[in-house]
Figure (cartoon, helix red, strand yellow):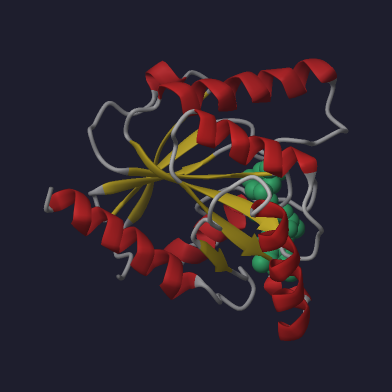
Amino acid sequence: MDIKNATFVISNTNVNKCPQEQLPEYAFIGRSNVGKSSLINMLTNNKNLAKTSNKPGKTQLINHFIINKTWFLVDLPGYGYAKVSKKARSKFQDIIYDYFSKRLQLVCTFVLIDSRHRPQKIDLEFMQFLGEHSIPFCIIFTKTDKLSKTQIQKNITIYKKEMLQYWETMPTYFTSSSVTCSGKNDILNFINKVNNDLNTK
Ligand code: GTP
Ligand code: MG
């Protein structure tokens, strides 16, 4: 699938003010700095669409982007950033919680995990939360340009082993790099397939 058109629509702290259109929506979530905004830019071929930064805590709002006029990509604040104040952290958490518990248009969530790291409690708990709310999700292992192919496979094997302690099967997963654009086709083809399945229902 080609992205012909990607346009910023609106930023919000309040899920009730998000776009009312009944279009399928795909959200990107994960720890601060994991590469959510960069991945959105990579997928849409637009380096300036979502704001990125090397400092964690850049994205602070729910950001809707409309793609090919038919579906939404959503950039969210990251979780787990220790350096913001407790008050700010709990505000982000409220926004995220509200978004995931109320947003009916949400079709699938991409949980981004830094491919370099061992499984972290905060990500495992977040996926648990999604499971408890029956929210479908996939994993994307990010920043793979920073590792060798062997190391990526090794880390994914460790991750799978950890996931299988809590889940019956490993969720669908992808690897990505916003630097080399690896993973782009796989992720966009997946979204395309889900959109097509929804249309034929
Ligand atoms: P918050 O909005 O703060 O939650 O962060 P985020 O998850 O949106 O991360 P963002 O896309 O802003 O990227 C954080 C930093 O990681 C930036 O310096 C990016 O350039 C860098 N980065 C993101 N993706 C990749 C990648 O695939 N490879 C490499 N090498 N760096 C990346
Ligand atoms: Mg961001």
